Image 1 (cartoon, helix red, strand yellow):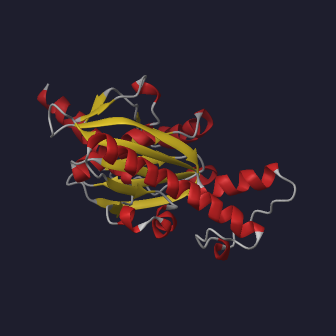
Image 2 (cartoon, rainbow, N blue to C red):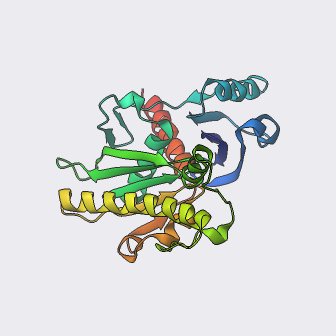
Length: 260
């Protein structure tokens, strides 16, 4: 059984995959609670980890597996993996969570995609068919912006008279908010939705092909509600996109080892 771990900026998610690629167990917790919340590691034979949370959390994760005599594999971004080419100027500097999500999206659709991970930060990445081989995918680049909560809280903390509220009633999607907390919340959702819609337009204009929108992460359902119909017609919300990408990469590595 393969345990995959997606250690994000504030939360860690995990899933156990069977040999057939089915998730048999999964969970999530705040990074600080990982050691006490991680599921029992029965029948785990390998571990694949994407960590963008830094060295301190990496050490916390490592200590858990050291006590279980398991040596995890730390997923790294690369120039090519699982039939996808990475066109980042320095491929190894691409966030491992973004790379895993892009790989999962390609294997899900095998078609042009805008891949959105909506967590503490929002990443919006463009994925195309290779012009020389349509069965291959190419990540051509993307953008990063603050997530829904971070965008609101940073504005509230940097300005004395702009209140930040977690009340869902503030987030209506209205362009004409009549109180400040709602204006901030709606400004944040407009910024994120606008960035997604702009990426969809850019891909369509450059490649003459309307991409699918693959949306994942904790804020995915909230964002989906506020996207324009022209976007939602192409929209698919996918849970565990990063974890699925880690499973695909581990399976690919295992298959290569078997052939050697």
